[in-house]
Length: 445
Ligand code: PLP
Image (cartoon, rainbow, N blue to C red; front, side):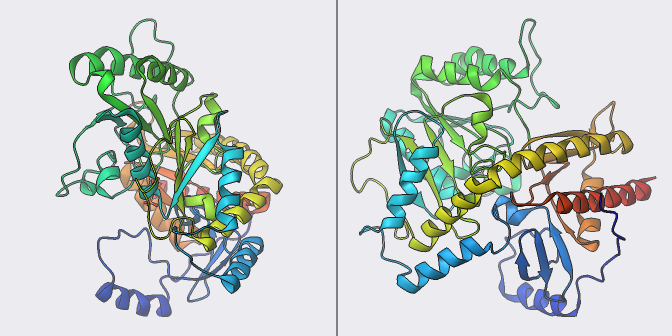
């Protein structure tokens, strides 16, 4: 195991400070930043700032750099495509768009043939999914989940229920009813006698309360859910939840949309996180990790659901050539070991973090799949009182000691390194993480 000496960096350095001052004047303050990290370049799991400080990257540009920074295979694909043409518009055809759609059909988490619609971001993927669901079913209503994050354009924002500030003042569109997410560590609903687990409690609440008192199921076009909740706290549903939800959808002709923008494309050690429950969705939303950082998002829909007619939906950049070749190269890297590495390093990390939990009273819960891992911080394990302050302090201390990491939910940390991370880097990063957790705990005494 790596036991490198840990030093405190003098950050932000002079070059970073000068750039931060310029940023303050001209870049919208609507963007919330995690730390004063000003990037110069990166390779794999390493990122360097403009003053030459080295960081280990445990956040991958919010789960985007699946293949790490500037993977040579991805860079080469982008360079070669850029030499040929950068854009042609969605009014025409080109091969890498078709190849990528064929590949997504091959890896889609359902048996039926898949049809792909590509745009540029996660929020656009969600907009496409909800428009298609309404179009296909002719129904107006949706079910979303508390703590969910699906984007910030008005349609997707109407489902986002992770932080009130993201909705305040924006008047989301109507037709979305939010129910509690199956968050077993902090259940909102009381479990009923006979419930197999908290997943059954949530599905029963939807069926016996929401569908009876609030929204008729025959008015519901789709249930939109993150199979593992991301921004809301890296929450993994219990075993019964997805099979019961699928069954409920089937009974009422409701579509199941899996928002795999954060959890998909191999992050959990499988192509799609919903595969961990053996359940097939009707529409999958994808973005983030799909093209290693070149903006790309889209939906993969069952052919029988993709019934909208020509010109019903579209965008100028759909099937952008640079994004398509970056995605194809990303998929090749993942097929050639990345996916397996995510599963193996993820298991190892979960085990190391569970051991860490025994040494650190501030760690209330450790959970995740593959390299999508959440660590929840509490003031006291027995009462589970959330400790947002220590979580935020750990993010700051990590930045000062060469580890890029970010929070999620109210009091959790997300650990989402590139899927190509080596065992040595896992050890180094966890060593740093434990060191800063110890520092933050000492400060709290
Ligand atoms: N859906 C999920 C699950 C996400 O995590 C995000 C972004 O964090 C989005 C949608 C929105 O993606 P984008 O920021 O690319 O619009």
